[in-house]
Length: 174
Image 1 (cartoon, rainbow, N blue to C red):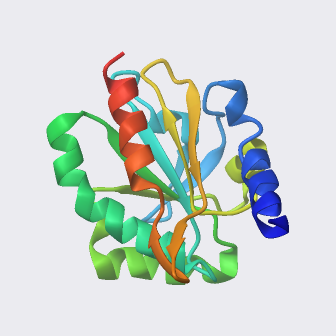
Image 2 (cartoon, helix red, strand yellow):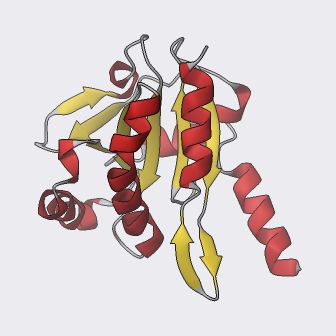
């Protein structure tokens, strides 16, 4: 019970900035090829944008979640139009490994990958772990969606993909 309480407190504090339903902040991120990009430019004002926060180092659920989301996307896109952005919150010493797994798995064919090398976006959002997601609506307003992962019998079985997809459909219909 104490563990569940601590997880709940941690999850509730995960997106203190985003929970105020503010616009995505304008901070500098890095593309897969190393070029800079402004976080706010990842949202086009026409379709919802999912922001999935992950890190390579010590987060197996983050990596598994990327694979599950990648596999689910074709079906999701048949039901709702959206953009998927994966934001790595790895520290600089893990950045090359994070970029390498993206290339190795071929995930960038469906997902836009950016890297929060200086933790500006994560710090602004009050994000202190992952996997986590938020969906930015057509008006640029952030809607916190998920934090953490699901386990059954000690095995990671999901990153709340169903909740992510429900939020996509809800905001795409607006």
